[in-house]
Amino acid sequence: MGTVDANAQSSSSLIKDFLHKCGGVAVIDGGFATELERHGADLNDPLWSAKCLLTDPHLVRAVHLDYLEAGADIILSSSYQATIQGFKAKGYSLEESESLLKRSVEIACEARDVYYTRCCKSSSDHSTDGKVLKQRPILVAASVGSYGAYLADGSEYSGEYGDAIDLKFLKDFHRRRVQLLAESGADLIAFETVPNKLEAQAFVELLEEEDIKTPAWLSFNSKDGINVVSGDSLSECAAIGESCEKVLAVGINCTPPRFILDLIRSINQVTTKPILIYPNSGESYDGDRKEWVRNTGIADEDFVPYVNKWCDAGASLVGGCCRTTPNTIREIHHALSSRRTV
Ligand code: MET
Ligand SMILES: [Zn+2]
Image (spheres, rainbow, N blue to C red):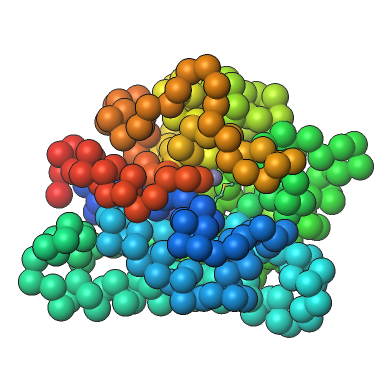
Protein backbone atom coordinates (compact mmCIF):
# COMPACT_ATOMS: atom_id res chain seq x y z
CA MET A 1 0.00 0.00 0.00
CA GLY A 2 1.45 3.39 -1.00
CA THR A 3 1.78 6.31 1.40
CA VAL A 4 -1.25 8.12 0.01
CA ASP A 5 -3.39 5.03 0.46
CA ALA A 6 -2.00 4.54 3.94
CA ASN A 7 -2.95 8.12 4.81
CA ALA A 8 -6.42 7.70 3.40
CA GLN A 9 -6.76 4.47 5.32
CA SER A 10 -5.67 5.98 8.62
CA SER A 11 -7.84 9.07 8.28
CA SER A 12 -10.90 7.05 7.29
CA SER A 13 -10.71 5.13 10.55
CA LEU A 14 -9.72 8.11 12.71
CA ILE A 15 -13.06 8.41 14.49
CA LYS A 16 -13.65 4.66 14.75
CA ASP A 17 -10.19 4.09 16.24
CA PHE A 18 -10.66 7.07 18.51
CA LEU A 19 -14.03 5.78 19.72
CA HIS A 20 -12.49 2.41 20.35
CA LYS A 21 -9.80 4.01 22.53
CA CYS A 22 -12.47 6.05 24.31
CA GLY A 23 -14.41 2.90 25.19
CA GLY A 24 -17.15 3.19 22.57
CA VAL A 25 -18.42 6.70 23.24
CA ALA A 26 -16.75 10.10 23.27
CA VAL A 27 -17.65 13.45 24.74
CA ILE A 28 -17.67 16.58 22.56
CA ASP A 29 -17.25 20.01 24.19
CA GLY A 30 -20.12 22.40 24.88
CA GLY A 31 -21.25 25.84 23.69
CA PHE A 32 -18.20 27.87 22.84
CA ALA A 33 -19.33 31.35 21.88
CA THR A 34 -22.00 31.41 24.56
CA GLU A 35 -19.41 30.29 27.13
CA LEU A 36 -17.10 33.15 26.11
CA GLU A 37 -20.09 35.46 26.65
CA ARG A 38 -20.74 33.97 30.07
CA HIS A 39 -17.17 35.01 30.90
CA GLY A 40 -18.05 38.56 29.94
CA ALA A 41 -16.89 38.71 26.31
CA ASP A 42 -18.97 41.05 24.15
CA LEU A 43 -19.58 39.06 20.98
CA ASN A 44 -22.21 41.31 19.47
CA ASP A 45 -20.24 41.40 16.26
CA PRO A 46 -20.41 39.73 12.84
CA LEU A 47 -17.39 37.65 13.84
CA TRP A 48 -19.12 36.36 17.00
CA SER A 49 -16.71 34.00 18.82
CA ALA A 50 -13.95 34.76 16.32
CA LYS A 51 -13.87 38.31 17.67
CA CYS A 52 -12.15 36.90 20.76
CA LEU A 53 -9.28 35.71 18.58
CA LEU A 54 -8.55 39.41 18.12
CA THR A 55 -9.43 40.75 21.52
CA ASP A 56 -8.89 37.96 24.02
CA PRO A 57 -7.07 34.84 22.85
CA HIS A 58 -6.31 33.96 26.49
CA LEU A 59 -10.00 33.58 27.17
CA VAL A 60 -10.37 31.35 24.10
CA ARG A 61 -7.63 29.08 25.46
CA ALA A 62 -9.11 29.15 28.98
CA VAL A 63 -12.54 28.05 27.73
CA HIS A 64 -10.98 25.18 25.75
CA LEU A 65 -9.19 24.13 28.95
CA ASP A 66 -12.39 24.34 30.98
CA TYR A 67 -14.02 21.91 28.55
CA LEU A 68 -11.08 19.51 28.64
CA GLU A 69 -11.11 19.58 32.44
CA ALA A 70 -14.85 18.91 32.33
CA GLY A 71 -14.13 15.70 30.41
CA ALA A 72 -14.47 16.66 26.72
CA ASP A 73 -12.55 14.31 24.41
CA ILE A 74 -13.04 16.53 21.36
CA ILE A 75 -12.74 20.32 21.35
CA LEU A 76 -13.86 22.60 18.51
CA SER A 77 -11.83 25.63 17.50
CA SER A 78 -13.20 29.16 17.69
CA SER A 79 -13.44 29.45 13.89
CA TYR A 80 -17.20 28.86 13.60
CA GLN A 81 -17.83 32.39 12.39
CA ALA A 82 -14.23 33.17 11.37
CA THR A 83 -14.02 33.73 7.63
CA ILE A 84 -11.53 35.48 5.40
CA GLN A 85 -14.43 37.54 4.05
CA GLY A 86 -15.45 38.54 7.59
CA PHE A 87 -11.94 39.53 8.66
CA LYS A 88 -11.42 41.50 5.46
CA ALA A 89 -14.62 43.41 6.10
CA LYS A 90 -12.96 44.51 9.36
CA GLY A 91 -9.94 45.82 7.48
CA TYR A 92 -7.56 42.89 7.91
CA SER A 93 -5.36 41.90 4.98
CA LEU A 94 -5.65 38.50 3.34
CA GLU A 95 -2.47 37.40 5.08
CA GLU A 96 -3.70 38.55 8.49
CA SER A 97 -7.09 36.92 7.93
CA GLU A 98 -5.49 33.64 7.00
CA SER A 99 -3.23 33.65 10.02
CA LEU A 100 -6.16 34.42 12.33
CA LEU A 101 -7.98 31.37 11.02
CA LYS A 102 -4.96 29.18 11.66
CA ARG A 103 -4.53 30.78 15.05
CA SER A 104 -7.93 29.50 16.14
CA VAL A 105 -6.73 25.91 15.72
CA GLU A 106 -3.31 26.63 17.22
CA ILE A 107 -4.95 27.99 20.39
CA ALA A 108 -7.05 24.83 20.73
CA CYS A 109 -3.90 22.72 20.27
CA GLU A 110 -2.08 24.82 22.88
CA ALA A 111 -4.93 24.23 25.32
CA ARG A 112 -4.57 20.48 24.72
CA ASP A 113 -0.81 20.72 25.44
CA VAL A 114 -1.42 22.65 28.66
CA TYR A 115 -4.05 20.09 29.62
CA TYR A 116 -1.64 17.17 29.09
CA THR A 117 0.96 18.91 31.24
CA ARG A 118 -1.62 19.32 34.00
CA CYS A 119 -2.52 15.64 33.70
CA CYS A 120 1.14 14.67 34.11
CA LYS A 121 1.43 16.77 37.24
CA SER A 122 -1.72 15.33 38.76
CA SER A 123 -1.50 12.18 40.84
CA SER A 124 -5.09 11.10 40.18
CA ASP A 125 -7.59 11.13 37.29
CA HIS A 126 -9.74 13.65 39.15
CA SER A 127 -8.66 16.72 41.09
CA THR A 128 -10.21 17.57 44.42
CA ASP A 129 -12.45 20.17 42.77
CA GLY A 130 -13.92 17.62 40.37
CA LYS A 131 -11.74 18.35 37.34
CA VAL A 132 -11.10 15.46 34.99
CA LEU A 133 -7.31 15.22 34.66
CA LYS A 134 -6.92 12.00 32.75
CA GLN A 135 -4.30 11.41 30.08
CA ARG A 136 -6.38 10.26 27.11
CA PRO A 137 -6.66 10.76 23.34
CA ILE A 138 -8.06 14.22 22.56
CA LEU A 139 -9.04 15.48 19.13
CA VAL A 140 -8.98 19.09 17.99
CA ALA A 141 -11.65 19.82 15.38
CA ALA A 142 -11.50 22.92 13.20
CA SER A 143 -14.97 24.42 13.26
CA VAL A 144 -16.49 25.58 9.97
CA GLY A 145 -19.84 27.32 10.36
CA SER A 146 -22.24 27.62 7.46
CA TYR A 147 -22.58 30.57 5.07
CA GLY A 148 -25.57 31.60 7.17
CA ALA A 149 -23.28 31.95 10.19
CA TYR A 150 -21.06 34.35 8.26
CA LEU A 151 -24.14 36.42 7.38
CA ALA A 152 -24.62 36.83 11.13
CA ASP A 153 -28.37 37.30 10.76
CA GLY A 154 -29.46 33.95 12.18
CA SER A 155 -29.95 32.43 8.74
CA GLU A 156 -28.14 29.26 9.75
CA TYR A 157 -31.43 28.59 11.55
CA SER A 158 -33.55 29.09 8.43
CA GLY A 159 -31.25 27.79 5.71
CA GLU A 160 -32.88 30.23 3.32
CA TYR A 161 -30.10 31.77 1.29
CA GLY A 162 -32.19 32.93 -1.67
CA ASP A 163 -32.05 31.83 -5.31
CA ALA A 164 -28.83 33.73 -6.04
CA ILE A 165 -26.84 31.39 -3.80
CA ASP A 166 -25.99 28.22 -5.70
CA LEU A 167 -23.60 25.32 -5.22
CA LYS A 168 -20.71 27.07 -6.94
CA PHE A 169 -21.15 30.18 -4.82
CA LEU A 170 -21.07 28.17 -1.59
CA LYS A 171 -18.03 26.17 -2.63
CA ASP A 172 -16.15 29.32 -3.60
CA PHE A 173 -17.21 31.00 -0.38
CA HIS A 174 -15.78 28.22 1.80
CA ARG A 175 -12.87 27.05 -0.39
CA ARG A 176 -9.89 28.93 1.01
CA ARG A 177 -11.04 28.66 4.61
CA VAL A 178 -11.44 24.90 4.35
CA GLN A 179 -8.01 24.55 2.69
CA LEU A 180 -6.39 26.59 5.43
CA LEU A 181 -8.08 24.87 8.32
CA ALA A 182 -7.22 21.49 6.80
CA GLU A 183 -3.56 22.47 6.99
CA SER A 184 -3.73 24.04 10.42
CA GLY A 185 -2.83 21.00 12.50
CA ALA A 186 -6.44 20.10 13.37
CA ASP A 187 -7.32 16.40 13.54
CA LEU A 188 -10.58 16.92 11.73
CA ILE A 189 -12.87 19.54 10.26
CA ALA A 190 -16.25 20.03 11.94
CA PHE A 191 -18.80 21.36 9.47
CA GLU A 192 -21.42 22.55 11.93
CA THR A 193 -24.96 23.86 11.97
CA VAL A 194 -25.38 22.98 8.28
CA PRO A 195 -28.91 24.16 7.49
CA ASN A 196 -29.63 22.73 4.05
CA LYS A 197 -28.77 20.10 1.49
CA LEU A 198 -27.06 22.51 -0.90
CA GLU A 199 -24.43 23.47 1.64
CA ALA A 200 -23.86 19.84 2.67
CA GLN A 201 -23.24 19.08 -1.00
CA ALA A 202 -20.87 22.06 -1.25
CA PHE A 203 -18.83 20.79 1.70
CA VAL A 204 -18.42 17.23 0.43
CA GLU A 205 -17.58 18.43 -3.09
CA LEU A 206 -14.95 20.78 -1.65
CA LEU A 207 -13.35 17.93 0.29
CA GLU A 208 -13.01 15.98 -2.95
CA GLU A 209 -12.12 18.84 -5.33
CA GLU A 210 -9.42 20.22 -3.08
CA ASP A 211 -8.17 16.76 -2.17
CA ILE A 212 -8.46 17.64 1.50
CA LYS A 213 -6.48 15.18 3.62
CA THR A 214 -8.02 16.08 6.97
CA PRO A 215 -11.23 14.12 7.55
CA ALA A 216 -14.47 15.85 8.49
CA TRP A 217 -17.81 15.52 10.18
CA LEU A 218 -21.05 16.94 8.93
CA SER A 219 -23.54 18.21 11.49
CA PHE A 220 -27.02 19.54 10.70
CA ASN A 221 -29.56 21.44 12.74
CA SER A 222 -33.30 20.97 12.97
CA LYS A 223 -36.21 22.86 14.46
CA ASP A 224 -38.95 20.26 14.07
CA GLY A 225 -37.30 16.93 14.85
CA ILE A 226 -37.97 15.70 11.31
CA ASN A 227 -36.16 17.80 8.72
CA VAL A 228 -33.15 20.09 8.78
CA VAL A 229 -34.01 23.74 9.46
CA SER A 230 -34.51 24.66 5.78
CA GLY A 231 -37.13 21.92 5.43
CA ASP A 232 -34.79 19.71 3.40
CA SER A 233 -34.99 16.03 4.26
CA LEU A 234 -32.59 15.01 7.02
CA SER A 235 -32.24 11.56 5.46
CA GLU A 236 -31.12 13.10 2.18
CA CYS A 237 -28.71 15.42 3.99
CA ALA A 238 -27.23 12.60 6.07
CA ALA A 239 -26.96 10.45 2.94
CA ILE A 240 -24.70 13.11 1.41
CA GLY A 241 -22.35 12.63 4.36
CA GLU A 242 -22.64 8.86 4.03
CA SER A 243 -21.60 9.03 0.37
CA CYS A 244 -18.31 10.82 1.04
CA GLU A 245 -15.37 8.79 2.28
CA LYS A 246 -13.79 11.82 3.88
CA VAL A 247 -16.81 12.35 6.12
CA LEU A 248 -16.25 10.20 9.19
CA ALA A 249 -19.35 11.00 11.21
CA VAL A 250 -22.71 12.68 10.70
CA GLY A 251 -25.13 14.16 13.14
CA ILE A 252 -26.97 17.03 14.68
CA ASN A 253 -25.98 20.12 16.65
CA CYS A 254 -27.56 23.32 17.96
CA THR A 255 -31.00 21.74 18.06
CA PRO A 256 -33.39 21.50 21.01
CA PRO A 257 -32.83 18.32 23.07
CA ARG A 258 -36.45 17.20 22.75
CA PHE A 259 -35.98 16.51 19.03
CA ILE A 260 -32.78 14.54 19.31
CA LEU A 261 -34.04 10.97 19.74
CA ASP A 262 -36.17 11.03 16.57
CA LEU A 263 -33.37 12.66 14.62
CA ILE A 264 -30.88 9.95 15.67
CA ARG A 265 -33.34 7.27 14.53
CA SER A 266 -33.75 8.96 11.19
CA ILE A 267 -29.99 9.32 10.61
CA ASN A 268 -29.45 5.73 11.69
CA GLN A 269 -31.53 4.56 8.72
CA VAL A 270 -29.11 6.03 6.20
CA THR A 271 -25.66 5.85 7.72
CA THR A 272 -23.15 3.29 8.89
CA LYS A 273 -20.90 6.05 10.23
CA PRO A 274 -20.72 7.13 13.86
CA ILE A 275 -23.51 9.54 14.80
CA LEU A 276 -22.70 12.73 16.70
CA ILE A 277 -25.13 14.74 18.77
CA TYR A 278 -24.59 18.07 20.49
CA PRO A 279 -27.86 19.83 21.19
CA ASN A 280 -28.25 23.36 22.47
CA SER A 281 -29.94 24.15 25.77
CA GLY A 282 -33.37 24.18 24.13
CA GLU A 283 -33.64 27.93 23.83
CA SER A 284 -33.87 29.49 20.35
CA TYR A 285 -31.82 32.27 18.86
CA ASP A 286 -33.80 35.34 17.86
CA GLY A 287 -31.75 36.78 15.00
CA ASP A 288 -33.58 40.13 15.07
CA ARG A 289 -33.27 40.68 18.80
CA LYS A 290 -29.86 38.99 18.81
CA GLU A 291 -30.62 37.02 21.92
CA TRP A 292 -31.54 33.54 23.09
CA VAL A 293 -35.17 33.15 24.11
CA ARG A 294 -36.90 30.45 26.09
CA ASN A 295 -39.33 28.40 24.07
CA THR A 296 -42.95 28.53 24.97
CA GLY A 297 -44.79 25.22 25.00
CA ILE A 298 -42.84 22.13 25.88
CA ALA A 299 -40.00 22.98 28.23
CA ASP A 300 -36.68 21.33 27.63
CA GLU A 301 -35.64 19.70 30.83
CA ASP A 302 -31.97 19.31 31.50
CA PHE A 303 -31.03 16.81 28.80
CA VAL A 304 -28.21 14.98 30.53
CA PRO A 305 -30.47 12.16 31.83
CA TYR A 306 -31.27 11.33 28.20
CA VAL A 307 -27.78 10.94 26.84
CA ASN A 308 -27.64 7.21 27.49
CA LYS A 309 -30.91 6.74 25.62
CA TRP A 310 -29.40 8.64 22.70
CA CYS A 311 -26.41 6.31 22.74
CA ASP A 312 -28.74 3.29 22.90
CA ALA A 313 -30.44 4.69 19.80
CA GLY A 314 -27.15 4.92 17.92
CA ALA A 315 -25.23 8.06 18.93
CA SER A 316 -21.60 7.62 19.92
CA LEU A 317 -20.34 11.19 20.17
CA VAL A 318 -22.27 13.43 22.55
CA GLY A 319 -21.73 17.00 23.73
CA GLY A 320 -23.50 20.34 23.87
CA CYS A 321 -23.97 23.41 21.70
CA CYS A 322 -25.14 26.94 22.44
CA ARG A 323 -25.87 27.82 26.07
CA THR A 324 -24.53 24.56 27.39
CA THR A 325 -21.55 24.96 29.71
CA PRO A 326 -18.60 23.02 31.17
CA ASN A 327 -21.05 21.84 33.84
CA THR A 328 -23.24 20.22 31.19
CA ILE A 329 -20.18 18.51 29.74
CA ARG A 330 -19.00 17.32 33.17
CA GLU A 331 -22.42 15.76 33.72
CA ILE A 332 -22.42 14.13 30.28
CA HIS A 333 -18.95 12.76 30.99
CA HIS A 334 -20.22 11.18 34.21
CA ALA A 335 -23.47 9.97 32.69
CA LEU A 336 -21.59 8.11 29.94
CA SER A 337 -18.74 6.79 32.07
CA SER A 338 -20.56 3.60 33.08
CA ARG A 339 -21.06 2.50 29.46
CA ARG A 340 -17.44 3.03 28.55
CA THR A 341 -15.46 -0.15 28.24
CA VAL A 342 -12.14 1.42 29.27
C1 MET B 1 -24.57 28.34 16.41
S1 MET B 1 -23.81 26.87 16.73
C2 MET B 1 -22.25 27.34 17.35
C3 MET B 1 -21.27 26.25 17.33
C4 MET B 1 -19.92 26.59 17.86
N1 MET B 1 -19.10 25.40 17.95
C5 MET B 1 -20.03 27.20 19.24
O1 MET B 1 -20.30 26.48 20.16
O2 MET B 1 -19.83 28.37 19.39
ZN1 LIG C 1 -24.99 26.26 18.78
